[in-house]
Structure formats: structure tokens, C-alpha cells
Image (cartoon, rainbow, N blue to C red):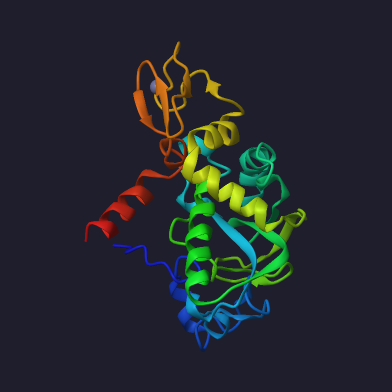
Length: 261
Ligand SMILES: [Zn+2]
């Protein structure tokens, strides 16, 4: 049985990676921290305590963990399709996410929020920013295991050979830099008013009909306070359901198995 092992970058480890000399030596990543080094993951990866400079916040959207019944069959297989059918619209509905660069990294998308000025930090401060980074990636149904401020992306033009056939990393949109205040604002809204944020991002407003959770004919789902949404069929539910409904059943089951041993 596939144990769903994920490496530090959140990608599934493929058996073929082990057959090419040192694992991942031809698999080039780009650090979003410190000097923005490029190289194999094992060469540029570092710990939160080694971070002195944050340049970017990353959300990793992996086609393979999304539910084809929700995003559609093609979007669960093609990152270009996932972007065109869903992610572009999601990003455009939020003033901070709208500034993200997006890269097709092969079998998924990296949503990159580049800072206009690097955040210089160390120690305690780096750990605080790491928590903020882990909060920010909850904006979208990304890989929940992705690292915070030590996340890596892949350079545009690099080859992602984790999958057969190998894919070239492309930029789907350039985006524009954001300020430290903007990333803090996004993090703040995800903690304090996520129901408003997710309803707007995924459904364009405070109410959507029919309800996407139960799909009942005459139902509608609306914001019910800062953390919950409500439908007459579903009752009041945690707004996080708006994110979690995008994950495939298999993925959620694996997560549960991992969490509960
Ligand atoms: Zn409902």
C-alpha cells in the first residue's frame, strides 16, 4: 500500500527518483528564503532556525490531491486546467492573492506571494513568521504538509522529472510584489474572518446557491459569523469545509491515518 510519504517540499516521492544517482541531483529547486539559492533540494533545504531573510510565501496546489468530482476530471490531472478553471478566479477575488505569481510545476501549481522588500528575521521572529506562512497557505486547498518559510519552489524553465514524462516549469502569470502589511493582512483575515474570505474566494460572495456542501436543489449557503457558514440542510458548519471539500476522499483518509497513527 502506498504510504503517501511526502518529502520536505511536499511532493510525493517517486521510486524512479532513487535510480538517478544521488536522489534528486537533477531536480532543481529555488529557495524562497535567504539568498534565493537554486539547486537540488538536499543542497538548498534548511531549517527555520537558519532563516535570516524571507522573500516569498508559497501555496502548493497539487492536482493529485484534489477531488475530480469537485474540480473536474481534467483539473485533477492538468495544472494548466486547474489554473484556468479554478485558481485564476480564486486569486482574482482576493486583493492580496490577486498579486501572486503562479507557476505550473508539472503536476501542480505554485502560488507565490513575493515580497517587495525581504523580511529580515532570526530565531524567535523566524518561528513567528513560519506560523504566519503556514496560516497563509490555508487560503487555498493546497498541500497541508508544505513547509512555511523554508518552502521551495521550482525555477521557471527547470525540468520536473519526478513524473513521467518530465515537465518543464512554466509561468502562468507574473504577479506583482506585495508588502509585509499585505501578507499580515491576509494572515489576519484567515485567522479572524475565514468564512468571509473563503466564501468570497471560492464562491464570489457571502451567499451561494445551491449549497456546494450538500448540493440540494433549493438550498443556499451563506456566511454565519466569522468562522462558520450555514445552509438549511447542512446547518452551521465550520467554514474550513469550503476548503476541505476540494480534497479527494483518498487524500483525506491518508491524512487521517497519518494523524491518528
Ligand atoms: Zn447544504
